[in-house]
Length: 157
Image (cartoon, rainbow, N blue to C red; front, side, top):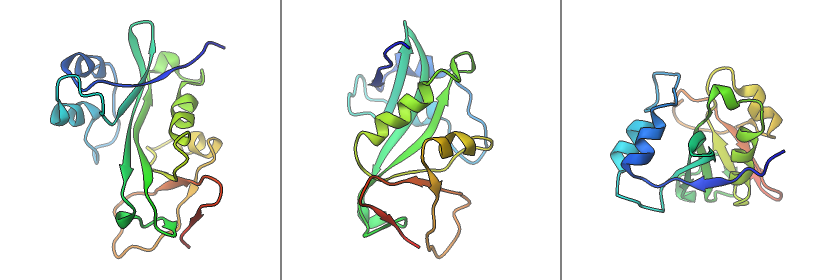
């Protein structure tokens, strides 16, 4: 299998054009394109967007945000964690390990990870080692979060 390289995507209009090839399913979340438009700073290398290119084509992408431990409802003790948001691989490239490469890239930060999977993607996340989060919140945010824990981290029960 070819070497898969996950890259930090620049926040610029060229990246915005490449995002137009992706589709987001679900009304409750903003599309990555809208996220990108709201965050455009020409060639900002600290963007939350990551992707995989095949030649010049962006074929997979995700948002990866670090969340401060003061907002942690998922892990014990509270700690900084990552949120994977809107992971997507173009249909012609699915089933080739690109989604796994994106998740493995995020796991490489050795922080707990939370995601709110889209409909019909639970099987993928379970294969990646994610489990349903058990957490206490005063109100349900309408999400069914899944979490991944690096060694030595416990989730709240």
